[in-house]
Image (tube, rainbow, N blue to C red; front, side, top):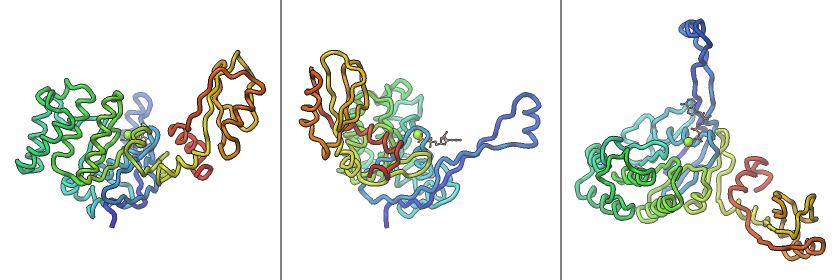
Length: 330
Ligand SMILES: Nc1ncnc2c1ncn2[C@@H]1O[C@H](COP(=O)(O)OP(=O)(O)O)[C@@H](O)[C@H]1O
Ligand SMILES: [Mg+2]
């Protein structure tokens, strides 16, 4: 049995429609109209113990809605979820003992209290044995560098500090599954890197299964072998990141600076995907034309001042999947 099983999951939000003006307000007392939004439509997947899975999608794709159902905060409209044999919304307390949750957008710590007091409260709530608590606190304080701001009210912490405190709090009771909803959102490069390293360690050293949502593809590259790509509440792709990379890997990007501006630049065997003055971005399939062939071809007609060749960016790959559909690509 898989650790997490999701079958034909749906979630519909019904939002009361606001009626215009005084009369509208009165009318809506008697007759309320609803706008419904299907945020998650027929999503299925399974996750095995020890995996780190990236749950990716643009804003509004349904990532947070899914996480909220997995953690038991929201009740599905239909479909089934089993987390280690538990139906989250039916046994929310029991589920809470086996999972940790961090919402990047919102802290779970008491806003006005120093982080240390939230930790102490969680210790009570989850009845964490003193020794275990000490050990976890020491470990987290060291890796996450919590010591320096443990006594500061949460409201005064920087976003990066707050996120570190939040993730420590989510792991105090030794959950076997960790849900992270946009854990690096708003963080600077250094703080992001620190967060990623920590997530990796938690997975490798404690065997914690991690599901993280993000729209930052570098999170995925650093952390996940598998990704579930969603859009408009539906799964677009579920599989290895490497497989997508391999498919796209046939493509290369040649960036050239020409001597003098050239408008209407074009070249057989390559697609000009961007132009800025005398700088051109050319995409080519390396199975059809080699970089040196292409460069030779260009230099026969133009004077090249500088050039660089790069792999396509992961962001670009994902954008194309959303545009063209996975079938066109993988
Ligand atoms: N409480 C809510 N009431 C009504 N609609 C909602 C609510 N929460 C989210 N939605 C809508 O459901 C869709 C999915 O939202 P969400 O799961 O938050 O997406 P994501 O986390 O991928 O950005 C969006 O269209 C959003 O506007
Ligand atoms: Mg979200």
